[in-house]
Image (tube, rainbow, N blue to C red; front, side):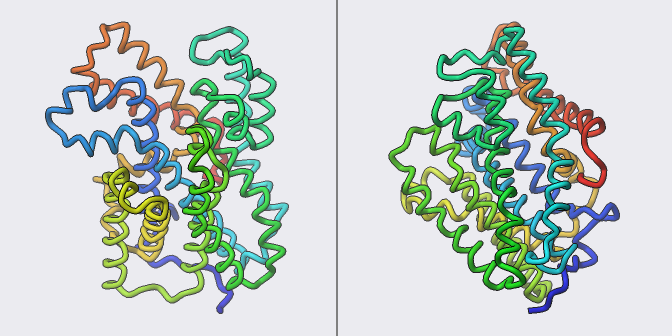
Length: 375
């Protein structure tokens, strides 16, 4: 195989060097997370929208937070592996110390401030931020967040307050990337072997879900293995993008269109699909997301770079900052909803301002804590 890094097509990146399609996909994902966390507290399907929109659409909007995280994992694997190949020509040539430094610069500043704020709110006994379970403690939450096993801590002790709980997915992601450079160096420059091994991990998702079928819901929601399967799917897609010739315009259109239908169909029909096909159908979301990433990488749907979609791409560029801080908006909005009477009929009216405020907070935080080179 050639060892040159992936070369984006002219239409696949914007003037800023970012891929607008991938930013759009991340924007959709983060908005699904925000909507889910708000709908848990203001049930969207019980608002006036139920008389206007189909139930399956409202259900997808309300309950796709976990699926959105799966999409994030897949996108993360694609982007990070793609950046390594672009810099070094091969996963096996990765500069491990530099990789760890970049991850630390990207993740640590905001995470450290967030943990300090959460700890202070706990010590001040602020509602929704105070750790109350007898099986949990402030020290336990801090240590598990800093050592990348908060998802396991929650599985053993129960859900943490919302501001802490969002860190479960970060623990899975960073635990994966702790071992990723070592795996790359062990595989050397054998990218074919790397592709086979990462693909095998990606395709083990149904078995991973099967092993969890009798576990409590919290273990199923926050398990490490399925999350790593999604990351591996993205890495496999990045290897395909780097090593195979780009598809022609017709093939790009077919790939992008089918992938978009796959992802949208899964989000809308997951319960019915799972009931009919069981665990194997869960591969549809990471594989569909990976196919979309490949299509965007090769320049599919260049009109997504137009301003009409900027409102979706903007939160995609700030997804990490929005994700870590959005509960600071969700809780006050829910409090205000109840203080003003809590009328569910108009409950949907609280969603747009909540989403805007969460994105605005993410933008402010990004200015303060995100290095430009890591954005």
